[in-house]
Image (cartoon, rainbow, N blue to C red; front, top):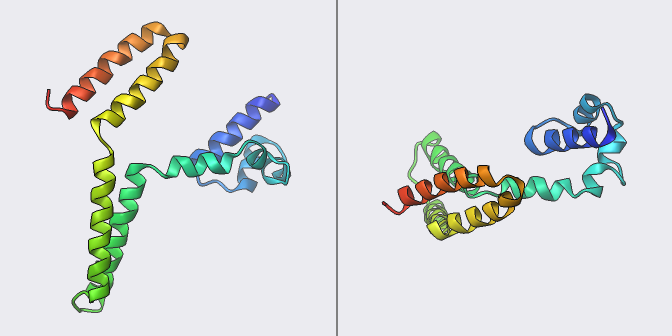
Length: 146
């Protein structure tokens, strides 16, 4: 396997699995230093930033907030008590945060992302772009009740 192929495999493993840096190095056939040393691929190519960006999605944020709600309510249930004022306030704030996140994911957000993607794809594969555009339009219509 060429170095660029090893690097791409390492990147995918780093971004999309819970494998350790040592495990990634072993799987790809490079040293751990190549993966995570001072001049390693993670630092050199900003993979940490990419991984952070992948995890900070609307769905992950909302799931994390719901998990916080669950933890607060489970603690009160385990202790067989009602929620404290502090816990109730926290739940209200979490619910507001979820509502705010949901409001920010509008149809216009989907349209903007689709347009950017299709602008890129048209040069790569125009036939595929046309086909995907039809699906994008159908998706948007289902979101706006059309």
